[in-house]
Image (tube, rainbow, N blue to C red; front, side, top):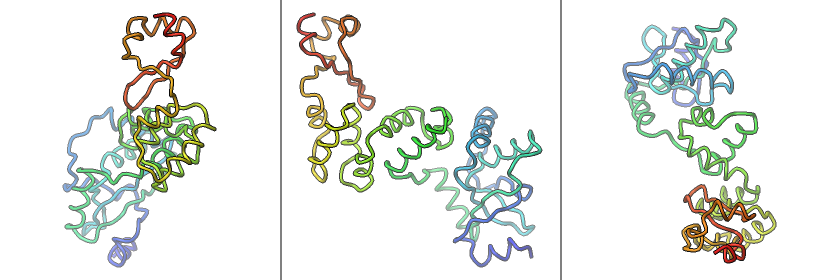
Length: 259
């Protein structure tokens, strides 16, 4: 019996072990049988640049090898890295070992159905950290298995003052409230309003109105008649809501004159 097998028997469901890459293979329990080569190549590029963010999960067989039930794409990407580079760091790979086939099958189903999400505040900060290290939106989306649209939205939230993200993490404001604060570039006003709404059931529209009480929606008949391009050409400023696709004109006096 190998050292890994001994540990697996005693603490399989409690620890993540470093397993030699050569001992890993895709288990028949893994639900993803077909994966595009382009996806694996992109994932390999991301792992080479940022490292392996999520560990793999698998079941050790009678020969001491480990069949991967969750993280098959990551394993394929690591194997691709190993093939194209003799100096790659993946001599071993972190794998959480299941106690038995039933547990491994549960993990495979859970991975396929829905990966457990981070809290919104944790995800916002994680995306922001990757962006600050030079990661592109497609790279972040690939690393966290989310859409690029989601990354753009989370990065907008990552630009909020820290007290807003702290309040979101503590459950003192909702994600909708945090989204509404992205329309403000006035930190003092944002923090003042934050103190007023903590722990309160306040609508997103109320936050938006408080931040821009005089703003006019682009759907207003005056805005439609004048046109956004003509309004901006005269020096008018526009605020776009990334979360609702609403556009606000911040200079009502100018809009009235043009109208």
